[in-house]
Amino acid sequence: MTRGVAVLLTLLVLAAALFTGWYSNRRVLYFPPEFQKQVNDCELHGFQTREPVQDDFHAAWFSGVLADLEEPSLFQRPAGSPRSVRFTLIPSFHPPIAVRVETRDDGRLVMTERRLAPPDYDWERKGRFSGARVRLLSDDEARSLNSVLADSGLLEAASTGCSDGVIDGMSWIVETSDPEHGYRYHYRQWAQDEPVRDVGLHMLGLGGWDSLPPELRLLKLSTS
Image 1 (cartoon, rainbow, N blue to C red):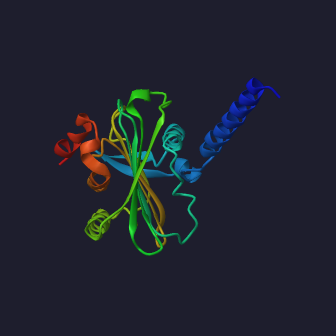
Image 2: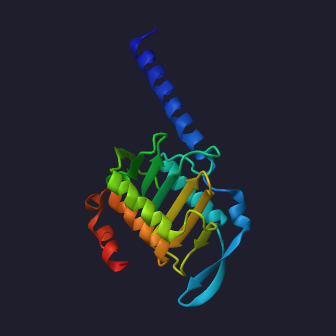
Image 3: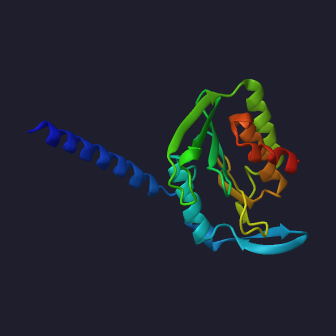
């Protein structure tokens, strides 16, 4: 076997492995299919509206973003698994960001922040994954996050999805997987809803607010 053929075969094997990982990640079921058959009440400018918890478009879009970020499915976690919370921010003109906090068996909380590399990002989400930042939360950070979650009521509230009457904007998604309450999903566009906004902003802060683009840092001012 010549050196050139050996190199080519090696590249083909690597390409096949990468494709297998990419394809298998997109077969992950991130959200319950029944969400598309459920409707919920949404408040828009003081008026009550009815919207599906999640439609086909959002299910495919959000699943693609989480797959691009190489995030696991919280919906498919085994029953009784320790609590896991994820906030996903999908801006219109910036790469998506996911901040996930997992509870370890010893009770400590571990934060994982993932994002796509900005130079390679485009609206078709073909951006290169830029890796993850992982760290243990301090006891104070853990207590603060648990307090925000308790105040929000999102752990036990029924899953909801509301567009806030906005066609385009920042998509805010809070997911929780809890041994007592199971899987919950809450989606808002521009996060006018206070519980989703408060949890999202808090988790962005855990991920490192200063590392965000300047336009996103203004969210803390515009939504407070």
